Amino acid sequence: MARYTEESKERVRDAVDMVDLVGARTELRRAGSNRLQGLCPFHEERTPSFGIDPVRKVFHCFGCGEGGDAFRFVELTEGVDFKGALEYLADRYGVHLETDEEDPQAAERRRARERLHELLERAAAFHVRYLWASVEAGPAREYLAGRGLEEGFLREFRVGYAPSAWDTVLLATRRAGFTNRELWDAGLAQRARGEGRLFDRFRRRIMFPLCDLRGRVLGFGARAIGADQQPKYVNSADNAVYHKGRNLFGADIARAHATKAGTVILAEGYTDVIAMHQAGLRNTVGLMGTALTEEQVTELARLAPVVQLALDADSAGQEAMLRASRMADQRKLKLRMVPLPSGMDPAELVQAEGARAIQHHVDAAIPIVQFVVERVLDGADLRSAEGRSATIDRLKPILAGVEPGPVHHDLIRRIADRLDAKPDVVANLLQPRIHASRNTRDAPDANLSRQAIDRQTTDELDFLAQALANGADGIKTLSGLELEGLLRGQALELAAALRDHGLDGIVPWIDGHPDFARSHARVSVRAAELEPSADELEAARLRLEMNQLDREIARARREGFAQSPLVLQRAKVKAMWEALKEDALERSRRSN
Image (cartoon, rainbow, N blue to C red; front, top):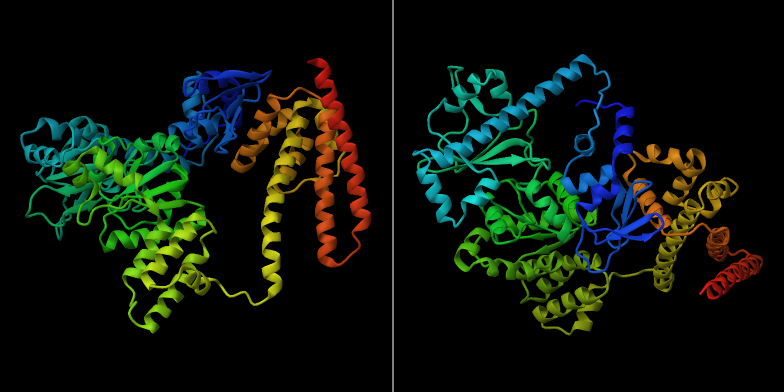
């Protein structure tokens, strides 16, 4: 992969007009001296919570939490990686990109991959032309029409047809200047047994291009058109550009819709995905004929925080849902199951009952944990005491991961109905046994502690926003503080970077640190709507000092040390904070 120089990257950053870039996606209105706001392009909302700082060229949404610089904005809106975003912005704002000198072997590998991408793109375009123009592809067109799929959507997904002759693609690509080795490396050719002769890998099949998020063709899924062809589906073999199980069918088309909706629908087959897009569910992607992998779960998490599983309601589809549940737990993905009619896939449902029917089923999606619980109950022996006891044991770890609330209450009720028992009895049986009574007493304290941590994080980021709003004076204040005691985690590292690199040096420093970039964007956008104020900055610092004392008081309580001096000190700091806030309120009254 070509590496562009740091100077090129900075020239692109300087050339970007943030108002022009973001304004193409959402209407912006001024909301402060250096802040513009509008409806977030990444989630549905009615009241603007999205803002940009056009000077520092960052964005942040206080609703969904997404944020970053211009490169991150393009990554999200165009579905590309950082390199793709850099190239997109360079092209948009007329900046020439210069490359670092590459190792000759690395440069050769990059050029070889680019040739394979070009070859695959040519093959996809050829298949599309052949589907719609050739007599031979008539049965394929009839099959697709019989599935209720319209030409416009088939063309959008670049569905094509591979002719039956053994060397059609082979000869066409050779004429275009590609070698036999490139055909082999791209997965478009294979060798005859015992002869070594190359021939087309895909013949007499409907071709579904398998693409990455940038829309580059990586390989193909191919469906047989004749009853005499086996197997029914053939995919590209793993090669230099295609790796089975890493991508999702249609993700390049669905990504923008999934980002805006905040949900992504996962179907199984290629025609299921196209049919659901045709029915208006444009945030649908497909498994590409593979069992769900961790790489695909990672891709789903990149598209949206909520995944609705519209998988076939057979045993294989159910197993896929269970695998998804286990893998999603590690990525904070919310999974919901779309209840499909038994024996019908999404494409059949759309064809038989129309777009409203599939939308109704998607709207009726249930939490994946409910699906798992019902599956355990359906397969359990509930007639004997031993069977009911074993069922409770199987359900305990499942229910342990469900937070108290309506979902947990509903699950308890469902389980009680199936066991023919009272809900409070079932809830008690499913409750994990706590051996130390101290743990029971401390549980509410733990919840309060989490709330306090969230509040303290907000206070820390608000302090940094005040520091940025005060410019050089704010950075000077940072430099005079013992940051390690006042701040924690990302706020501490961001404050230290601001102190060490200054206002101008912080942006290059956060490149390659997406979490820090997001925090920096949030702080910058917040700072852009604030007026410089030494008093507000000092009030924010005192708020941090109170939080620090709260932590020290809690530590003293746990370890059995005296708390009174700390409590007295906190009271003094609070009095100073209240005095500053009262002065600010009085000035506000006078100005009005």
